[in-house]
Image (cartoon, rainbow, N blue to C red; front, side, top):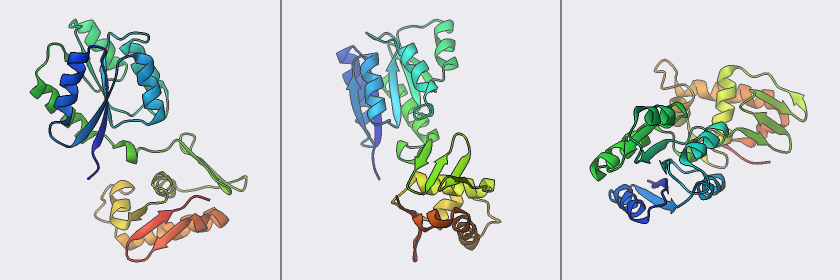
Length: 230
C-alpha cells in the first residue's frame, strides 16, 4: 500500500521534528516539513498531500490565512487540516474550525494523542490520489466537474447523474484500470441491489453519449475499465 503524504507546516524545528517522528513512526506515512506559510502554499500547489498539520503562528503568511486560501481553492478545499498551536482560547479554536480545519490540537501536546488524531483524520479522508479532479480537457472531451458540464467536440452532452459520476471517477483515475467492484463502491456506494453487470450497461450508454470520446473508455478484459488520455 502507498504511504500517506503528510505536510508539516511548523517554524519551530524541534516541534516539527517531533511531529515528523510521530507521523512516520507507524510506517504508514511520509512527512515533509516546511517552515512558513508561503512555503506551505507552494508545496501544496505543486502536489496536494493527504494531510496538512498546520501551525497558526507562522512567518510570512499566518496559518489562519493559509487555511483560508486552501479552502478557497477547488483543488485543495478537501485536503484535511489539523491545526497545532499554542493558542488555547475558545475563540481561536472556533476560528480555526470555522475556516475548515478538520481538527485542532494545542501545544504542548501528547505525541500519542497527535498520532491518534492523525489516524482518525486519515481514515475519514479521501487520499490525494483519489480526489476528484475539478476539470478535464482533451482533444474531443471537455468536462467541468464543478459546473457539471460535459461537451464533446464543442457540443454539450446530457448525462444522467450516475453517468456523470461514472465519468468523473474514470477520468480522475485516468490511465489506471478500475475494477467493477471499485466502481460499485465509489459510484454506486455499494448498493447491494446493483449487480456488477449493470455497470457494463451504464458504461455502454456513457460511451454512446460521448460519441468519438467514448473510445477513451477502454474495457480491460477480466479486470474492469480504463479511461485513457486523448
